[in-house]
Length: 305
Image (cartoon, rainbow, N blue to C red):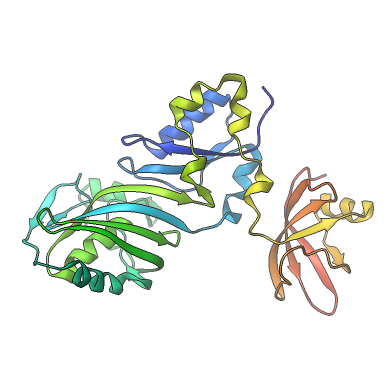
């Protein structure tokens, strides 16, 4: 089997950690250089993109928007902000119409501030918050600003206190925090009952495969791996045709930009671009600096000399 470079889109099962998935992929592919693009909690299912080989170097350049389907349980507060944690308070929830509940959701649409759950992977003084929480240490997590691009109320079960939602949000958004804060806004408690990630890093659920299915692919496994260049369609392209420019690029030196090879919209003064050759082979990532004399400055060079 040739050493693949690209992305696998794993449909993660409940109970499996993101790290467990990485370890299994390493074993299946017999590769060491494997990593995920963002942690999914063990009880969360759905899209977990896995970078293989040189693809690990491109994770930061992937789209940052994520989408989820979630169910929120009103009336319960836990120490983990999801239904699997220790219950620390219970309260009745008010009678609400679908329209009234949707009005409460308005408070969580757009740019909002939230505090991550204490049982989370956020770093506090160089240590993951969940480790401090498991040791019952007292600590505070800083408020962060996140963007909820879309928050759609799909179903409301007044009797059971279950709220079904679709969420489109920025990276770093915690749906557990959203559940907790929504409960508080309504005048009760709230925690996350169920969550499935349907899109992450530009990858959709219909592109995904379970690890069990991957294990059965045998010699066809490379067909499941998405080439790096296909994941960078959101980034404008700069084409290198000249041998001298290619040599400068491969030796990490900036290239004078004297031709219009930007294939997407005209860029602002500074922009991240992908650098390709005239056969559409990916050469790396550069920073286009526009001015009286414009340059492409290498940031990530594949096959550097």
